[in-house]
Image 1: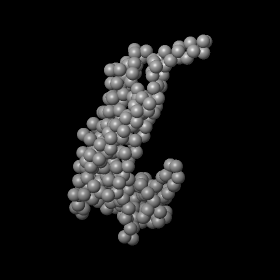
Image 2 (image 1 turned 45 degrees about the vertical axis):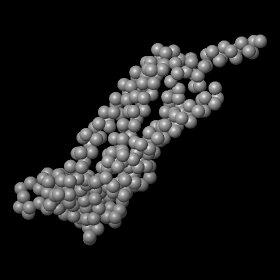
Image 3 (image 1 turned 90 degrees about the horizontal axis):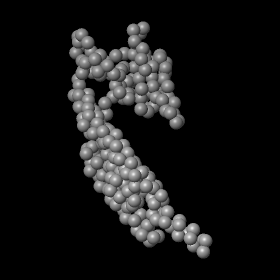
Length: 259
C-alpha cells in the first residue's frame, strides 16, 4: 500500500515528460519572456549581416575589381582607390600550423616603413620566402592586398574576396537561432504547463546542431562552387524547417507512445 501511494504521489508531481509538472506556470512564463528577449540579439546580428555586412563586402569587392594602376605621378597613392606597387624586403616569415595557425610576413621599405602582412594559408608564395627576399607588394586603400615574386602571387588576408555566401550563412544562422529562441519562448508563454517538446534537451539541442550543420554545409560548398549568395538561405532555411518538423513529430509520437 505504501509503495502504491508513493507511485501515485510521484505521478502527480511528474505528469509530463522532462519534469514540466514540477515547474510553476510563473517560472515557465518568466523563462518564455527571457527567451523572447534573448532572441533579439541574434535577430539584430541577422539584420546587420544582411543589411550592412554583406552589402559592404560586395561593394568593396566590386571597387577592388574595378581598380586600376595608380598614375605614376600621383601625389598620394597609398590611400587611394587605385592599385600601387611597392618593392619591399622580407624581414621574416611565420608559418605556424596547428590549433592556432599563423601565416604572416614582416616587410620593410628601407628604414621608412615596417609592417606585418597576414595570410590565410602558407602557399603558394609565403612558404617560399626567406629573409632578405625582395617582393612586389600591391597596395589598395592602405592595405597590402597581395605579394608577388618571380611570377608567383599570393593574396593577403586583407584582399577583398567574393565570399558573400559565408556572410549569408552567418546571417542565416543568426536568423535561425533567433527564430528558435522566440518560438520556444512563445510556447512557454502560451502553454506554461505543457510546453514539451520545446525544451533544450533534446529538441532544442538537436535543432541548434542541425542549424549550424546546415548553414556551414550549404555555405561552404556555395563558396567553392561560386553560386550566388542568396541560394544559401533559399536552400538552407527550408531544410532546417523540414528537419524541425520531423524532429517535432518524432518527439510527439514518442511521448504519446510512452504515455
